[in-house]
Length: 380
Image (tube, rainbow, N blue to C red; front, side, top):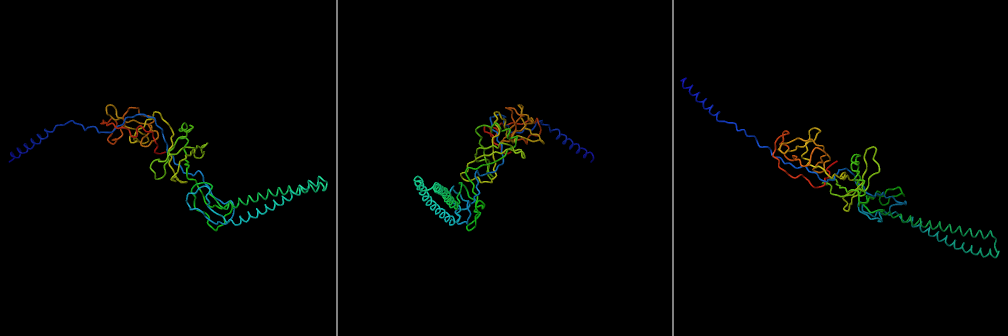
């Protein structure tokens, strides 16, 4: 029995050893991972920077009456567009019409008196020549005529003033634009030069004011000092990108000592009324022209604490970690100030497959994103 058990165990051991001896190491390594690479090149590029601004109407009027009186009529639709010269408010005209009639009547009286005094002065000259009146009487009549001339001038001025006051009872729009709501309604007293009736703002074109820091202003000085001010791109809240085109037309003459910024102004056409005073706007302005700029896809840039780097693929298809100095981000690309040379290949897609520098990869060449177009900023 023992002999049979021993023979069985020996047989099983032989089978196990035979099975183990049949496994041989293959020595094959997994293939290198495929990654997409792009070739570094340079191009002439205009660098843009984005700022936050506010929309302002070029003309804003707080409408106040020039004469006092009770509001008789409100002649506009609140929030509507009005043209220059349109009547917006009418003040009760009856007192001013009466004053005009009284001034015209007084003018007529003074004219009649002047005609009489002129005749008296003419007769006095004849009588003086014939020695029928004294010199004193002659001087008195001449003085009376001259006084009436002065009274006539005063009466004409009074009539003119009365006519102006009557005209001022119709409060008209001094500019074309959009009118606000009526601050005072029919039947209320409006005091001259005091009571606010409504406000009026121009609508086309519009201004966009924004501010730049001192460093950006210094970098863009060459562009901004040219006679032809550069164009700008403008976007509003809820809009994608910068769909509106404007023109830089004003740069302040000094920096704000409290904020260290300088103010810019762009003018933008607004025929559809898209821009409204008080809106926030995003403004994109060119700040630098580079004849030989290195721009790479922003996805290729990695971060290690406060350092930025990319993976360069060598001729032997090995990865090399390369620190780079970044410039501004331009849309989906980033300007590289230093660290890369023209012709080098960088990994754009598949970075998660690279576990250590020097790792072999299977590079697949692709075109750089946005290559051949002017760079445009994504943020500031």
